[in-house]
Length: 397
Image 1 (spheres, rainbow, N blue to C red):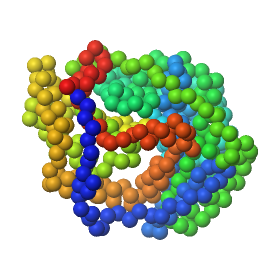
Image 2 (cartoon, one colour; image 1 turned 120 degrees about the vertical axis):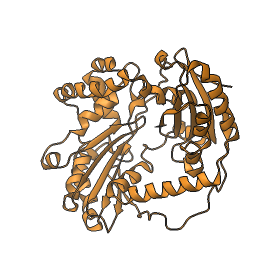
Image 3 (cartoon, rainbow, N blue to C red; image 1 turned 30 degrees about the horizontal axis):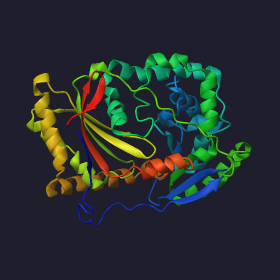
Image 4 (cartoon, one colour; image 1 turned 90 degrees about the vertical axis):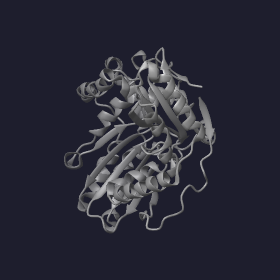
């Protein structure tokens, strides 16, 4: 069953006292968007480099290329900044994030360290081989726990944006087959200033020299990669449909929505106190997991249950009814809205959280006609109920 729903325009009344959002200043430096977030009360500096290159950009037959690229670029660069500023990296579907924190006096070192991820876009072959095992070990978790792939399986069925299952479809056996040349080609295409956003948050005095330092550091790679440089086109190829027989019998509800448009109503609908989870409780089947899969323009929230065969019909009937009604009580809306404000206030108080928020506000490369069309077609929210049969999700209803 798939149903299109229109959430209330104003599910909750505005509540004063929400977290203050610092004003973000953006400058262009050699094609790189640099966003500075002044936080006068901060006692540290947080930085995030968002690169518009992710697992969906892996060419057919080269799963994990973007993941390997992340590993080798996370430890790229030379000099003092590499030794003193550790970087945490994460490969998502449409982007790769590199994050770091430092004391205010080291803000320039932090910026240099993150910009080194772009650097001269080379891939050290010996370094790649040393990182291959680390990527294999990370991927082995999904090989041993098929449920970890369920998010991608259902997201690809619920959403038409290419690559929703790009992370989930990677297996440990795929990684040794990725060549040095394939990683180097992806880095040369994706790890360029024009495809990245650097955000740095912290005390205003610590941010004063960040843009100048970045410009000086990027001068060597700016030639030919500035804002007016031609952008090579990379076609996103639809991969064969995933098939996971180990998940047969799994039941899920998906909510397909624009990536940055969850909103309090959608959050309340799928919350632990909301009607969808309550439907599973009435059927006597506890929730086994939830996740959100984000692409460039769209996101899919996934909730999963594993009923006994004799209880599957009761569960799916209850879930279909809850999704068809899509009713959220005022008390649940109010509680979820309060929890959201508390989480946002807590997270938004740190420079790292503000840097991440600023980078993700618009971290994609300049939009192509295809990307724009996909974003426009994102449309209203869509609720769907699924059951895995023969290793693939089948709509129920």
